[in-house]
Length: 145
Ligand SMILES: CC(C)(COP(=O)(O)OP(=O)(O)OC[C@H]1O[C@@H](n2cnc3c(N)ncnc32)[C@H](O)[C@@H]1OP(=O)(O)O)[C@@H](O)C(=O)NCCC(=O)NCCS
Image (cartoon, rainbow, N blue to C red; front, side, top):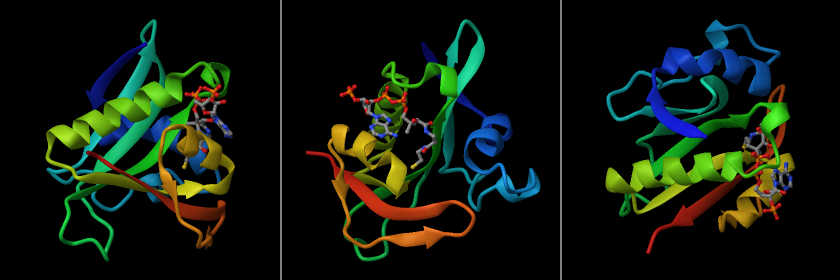
């Protein structure tokens, strides 16, 4: 698998199909997608795009003393799941954030993906909240040493 930086626009097909099928293409554009501090990674196998993740220079509101980066829209196409691709892509995004000075990374994680984040050594918040049209989420985070 090959992981490379891509443009925000190059995440949209998979972002819509895998994460936000109920939204229009325009609604799949997130605030900050094109900010200078934001980045988008694509995972490719034989030149076919099989995964995406987006990274934003945005910390959690209660941790302003530390530099936080948020991940959003991490997804792997169905046929490539459970082969370690998601974890490899997450690690690449963590590395990118660390190289930009991140003390920690965090995400609003779907309840359905909690065990994935647990296996990736993330701390899981107790408080659940609902993202309309998607379902229950919790905040997950990982501090770097
Ligand atoms: C979550 C997702 C990105 C994981 O990608 P993946 O390539 O399947 O994950 P990996 O193969 O790297 O899995 C790593 C570990 O997490 C586990 N895992 C992966 N997805 C899981 C899930 N949904 N629930 C429980 N465990 C999961 C795997 O079993 C594996 O554990 P193991 O090493 O003990 O076998 C992928 O399932 C996906 O795209 N889901 C739909 C979109 C989504 O929910 N994205 C996350 C938004 S917060």
